[in-house]
Figure 1 (tube, rainbow, N blue to C red):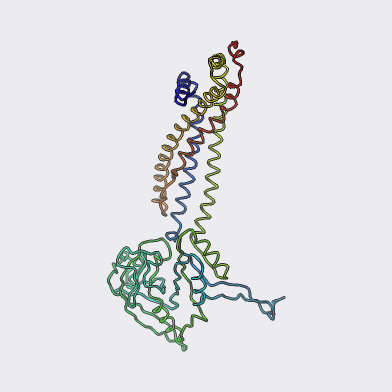
Figure 2: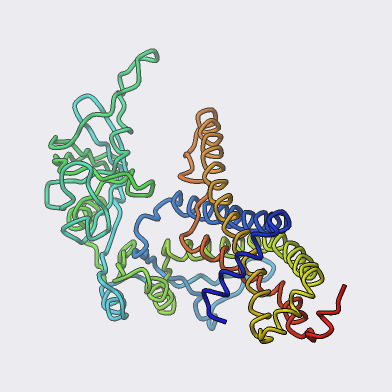
Length: 442
């Protein structure tokens, strides 16, 4: 039998029993729609969770901190019943040699040393005062850190600073009265601000130093550490720290506070972090958190999809029952087909095609309903979340459901295969009928 003749016969047989086919397909529709909606819900929760993680904007970034390991216990006293010495951990510093070791790791694009200002600071602009986390970086441009500017530039140069998006919100008027309105965040781009540095001398006298710097850039909001930070070249922060303590800083002996390691691609980020940890340092990367979240939600998608698949399995029983009844009703028809030359393969193909057709029609309806249901659920959920956020504060979720591009195709194919498998036993029974006996069947 030719393929198109087979398809035409299958469609004819399905069409002449519209009511039974429709009722049987309803079960497939419900199961397929459940799979699409539940998996879309899990995928939406996954995307929403990863998009709202702080500091997750750049997954190629690895933060490296000094490593700690318990020192050799030989020759060290152990406290027993009090009064004894206590074993202290040894620190593995981030020295220039550490930078060389990390740069030798395959996949590392760049290593940027970082240090913090270790003294008191008061940032003054006119009559307003503010504060911030002052960070020194050994790079000429913050774009190497994956940061971008909403105003100005991201380049670092002597005598200039680049500030995070929240820094201007910290300004206050020390002479303000209790009933005065809140201070409006000033526009600092291109403006000069004063840094009043302070330290205490050995005899308890406060010593101050004023430095004037120009704001050349304001960073885009990342909802991470950079939003409240003030960035300068590492050389300037190092000079201020040396002024504070009165001695020079030897990086070979004291190291850096942190290293920012840039990976060439997201695919090698966790491998680089593992290699750095193996060297004895502490490496953290947002990519590891993302992978953990993705693993959790992948399991959740499988569970949700399995719940929907149960409805499909129930529908499969309905398909098998429908096909069994169809064979009983069409036994003489099958005998007649075989008598005029139809082979067992032809009969098998017809009934398998009808079963697969029921699964396909039900799957198609389920995909359309599930897709539409996911969209409606997304709108309703986001409206509810928005109302809750307006009352309680917080971040509005970006989405509640998300239908992956592969899900409709998979659901439709799965429903068709379920229908095909459900009709396998009835189709084999129909193909094995003896023509003479089938023609005598009443």
